Image (cartoon, rainbow over all chains, first blue to last red; front, top):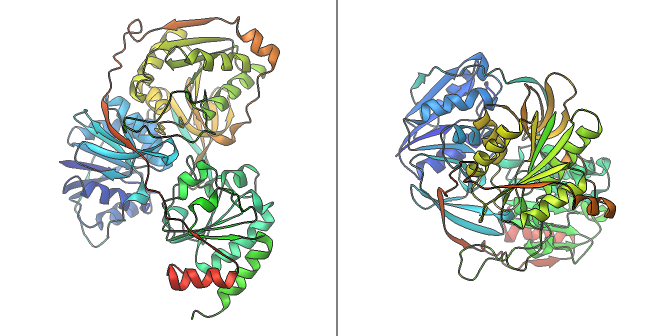
Length: 313
Length: 249
């Protein structure tokens, strides 16, 4: 088995999703290369080289690769793939956008969002918003796979792998990056946070979300939201947890004013401990909660805030 | 320009699926089926392009069994002009669907193809990106804003960190995200009218596409159930449980 991991990065630094994918790769074999394809991406390359247990970092540094455009990246992956048995990418918006295009160019039926590995050709993946788990065996000689990052621990970064430059990455002249509006936050990132405080339609306004943010800061937590809260404009799209948003699996997920539609549960039910605070005792969120508190959130949150200030006993 | 909108018939999004007792898949018999919710958003956007004068014709395409005609009629009732069914049973894998759609696109020469970003059955999130790759067209995936009035297509994409803007050379493949629009309901007169709109049928054979599966589903099981939880009555009790029982804060 020889595995190519498509590293996700912003040129200056490596995205943590790459570390989870490397751990998945280790379940397949021990010959693992990580591709960093970008422009002036030395920062990401150096960080990738520290990942424990990888053989090499392949560095493709071209202006056309600066912005992660699939049209320019997919042909590079296509040309590199012939040296490997498996090509893995994170099932993040980056990997989901890129890998199917490479798979089509290679005539491979990609396996999306795997949460388990049975063998070199057999994988487990959630379907129907995680209401069923399918075990699938691929008949393709080459496997292209996106990995559910929360299902695999992050690899450590104690290594010093050699870096090899690779060429390729031509501007296909099909698309141009025209800017981004990224959410800036001092809080932990949702997909890697240990604690998440998440709000739903019950929050009623973006101003009320400030209450949750204060609670999150007290816990060192990230802030998430249900689709309803994002659709209502209370918080930006990148807060959304669910089937089509982010999949999270923190140690504790505190759902506040979230009813618990199956699409939302799909994104958080692998959390270790789930807390639900909702005034509707019939809300489906209570069916997955370890600790449920039937209460009006506008009274419960200030009380919880206060209770957290008391010293641990 | 013509706009092609591939749509999929799936289990209704509000139904809780049940795994079959023999673990061969999920139960589809006597289950309510509907158009995939993301496909509804794609149809809506295409109709708005026509209403805004950017598009002249909206063609909905389904790949699947003959019952997919119902899904196509729903698209026609929303306002699409005509429909194409590529009849296959079962519905093939995303790569084969993308090849079938490429063959349809080569016959129809659309100026844009708009799809849902994923279908809520397989949750693969592949078909649009694969189709763009096979056609060597630009791809705007997970789009929450679309401006097709200029020479290039301007899109805003929902990405993990927030929003990203890109400009695409035409013709483009667009996959739509939840917040692009709010799909309309078909009115009764439009449902009646839709019955008379043209619906052509193709097969993988006449499109010359091999749809044999590459993946074998060995088993489908229920996910592990979570143990029953407990109710607490105060913030102090909750904090105590989290600190001393679960030991997570």
